[in-house]
Structures are given as structure tokens and as C-alpha cells.
Image 1 (cartoon, one colour):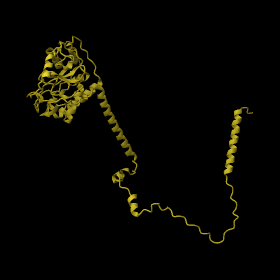
Image 2 (cartoon, one colour; image 1 turned 90 degrees about the horizontal axis):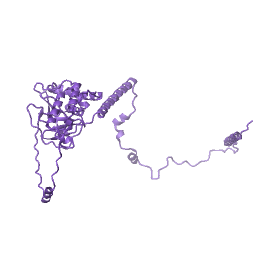
Image 3 (spheres, helix red, strand yellow; image 1 turned 135 degrees about the horizontal axis):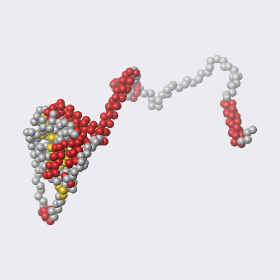
Amino acid sequence: MITSRGLWWALAAAAVAVAAVGFLRRSRTPDPAPPDERPALQGPPPERDAPPPWPPVPILGTPTKADVERYATRPAGFFDHPAVAAFLAERQPLDGPTRRRLNRWAAVALAVVLLAGSAQVLEWAVFSKGGHPTEEHFGGCAPAYADAGVRCVVDTDIEREPAAEPVMGEQQHAESQEPPVARQSAADADCTPGTARPHVRAIDAKVTRAVNRQWRRIETWLKANAPKSYRTLGAPGRARTIAVAEAQTGLSFPDDLRASLLRHNGSVNTEGTWPFGFLGNVNATIRQIRDHWRTLCEIDDTDDSDDPRTEWWDGRMIPVGYDGMGNSLVIDSVRRDVGETDHEDSMSFTPGGIRIRSYHALLKATADALETGGTIGYWKPEAVAGRLEWTIP
């Protein structure tokens, strides 16, 4: 027996719903039509009015043939061009082998793009990108030497306007001011590193691969275009020798510089050919880096400024090249970028008029300039009689 009141209500509602559905279905069933009890008409059916013509005549009148030709046809568009229509036309589906070949080639192309992109991202992640030319104007070039690998193509003389004389008020104001107090020179602590035991440090494998990749590009170009300069490349250096030079100078050589020295320990003079180097400099060996650093520290072992990069020389620099005229190509051991010394002025960290943010960036910029015939700032590498020469166009 059902004792739940809710269940009773549900059953009652269901019964009412069934009854309502039956009633509605019956009310919609049409009754059979009663038989026609009217007597049949004798004779033909009565005439009725003819239906109006279809379609009806427009309110403004029926268009003429000229109107239809004018408004019914549209001018030919882009998609009506035969080539476009042929391209958009439905084509026969490709057969199975052709489709598989296309898929394989697409997969290969995608893999090459991903590999190239990954390599570029790796280089960006490991090294800083090279700089861009600055707005500094290069006014001249160094004199030519018969035994040097630097040729001065154009020597531009810049005429400077004489400085304007100060007016009377400005002159009196300048005389009334006291001269600035000169900064007391202090000993350059970077030139007195003390003693330390050599320690061979490991180099990141990614850095070694990136450096070797740029050296292979340089070597390939030298073999084909400047074989005499190619033969000046030094043999691989030793990690122990690098560690000794670091201990004796108190400097930490960057990984990309150490990887480069392990592939080519500088350059040597061969057959009277100016040794290979960058931006008109000879590529220094490990011992030349140490000895040149000592010589520069003997010449200038003081700090004359709060910023070591604005001095003529500072002991934290690594001299990786020399031009034979008293100037050096240097690496800042702290900031890792490339600079150059000037025996008559202060150091500059825009060699050739551009920023070069690492030794690897210098290698890459050189390889790019060799392969494309381009420049590094205002320096242009060229092959002349089987030798590499850095010119200033």
C-alpha cells in the first residue's frame, strides 16, 4: 500500500496529464465531411474573373532592356580575374604518395626553422648582442705602414671652426671662478694582484660550441680568400697556460675569450705576412696578453678617475690585441665588452664607432663582415694579394 502523500500527488498529476493529452488529441481529430447534398449543376461552370498577372508590374514601371543591362551586370573584380578564378577553382585531391611527400617536406622545413631559431635564441641567451654604429664622426685614419695590416684608403682632414671669444661679462665671470681641484691619483689596485695559485676553470660547453662555430666561418673564408693570413693562425692554446696568466694578472678571462684561445693561441708572423687579428690589430697569444698587461701597468699604475673606463689604462683590462703603434684592443674583465686604448688619449669602448658587447660578438661580427663584404663600424676587412687587410673606406 502506498503511504507517501507526495507519491500520491505525483500519480494524480500523471493521470491528469494523460487525460489532458487524450482530450487534446481527440479535439484535434477532424470530423469526416458530410456528403454534399446540393444537386449537381447542369451545363458549363460559371465564368470567373481571370487572375492578375504574375509577377505584378513594378510601381515605377517595367525596366527596359538597357536598364537591365546597366544594373544587372557588375564590373569585373579581383576574383573574376582568370588566374584568381583558376587558383580558387576546386582541384582534384592529391594522391596518397604526393600528400605524404609534401607532409615530409613540410616537417623537414619546420624542423630547420625550429633549429635555426633555437640556435639564435641560445646565442642571445649566452652572449650579448653586438652594438650599432654611434653618431660619432670618424675624422681620419692612421698613417700607413709597409709592414702593417692596416691600409689608410682615405685620409679626411676636418676643418674645425675657431672657438668664439667670450664676451666681457662671461670673461669676468670665468676669471672670478676658482680653478677645479684636481683629483689625487691613487695606486691602481688592479695592477697589483698579489700572488695566487693557477686554477684551471671549466668552460661552458655552449660557449665553446658558439665560439668554434664563428671560428669555422672565419677559417673557411680565410682559406678561400686570404690563405697567407690563414697560415698565421696560432695552434690551440693550453688551459693550464691560461690559468697561469689569470693568476699572474689577477684577472678572470671571460669564457668566450678562453674558448677562443684554446682554438687559436693568437697569431704568428709567417712569410712576412701581418698576423691575423681583429680591427687592424694582431691577435695576441696568452703570454703576449700577460706581458703586455705588465708593460701597461708599469707605464700607468695609478687611478686618475672614479671611472676606470675613462682613463688611458686600467689594470682590469685584458689586452687581447695590438696594432704596433702603441694602441691595444682590450676586453673589460668586469663588463666583458670590447674596447681600445689610445696612447694619446683615453680608452674608448666603441671600437670602429660601434658597441661590441663581448669577444664572441667580435668573432661573429668579423665572420659576418667577411662573408658578406660588409664592415664593422668604419673597419672593412678585405682580401689583398692573399692577405687579410683592414681598411677604412
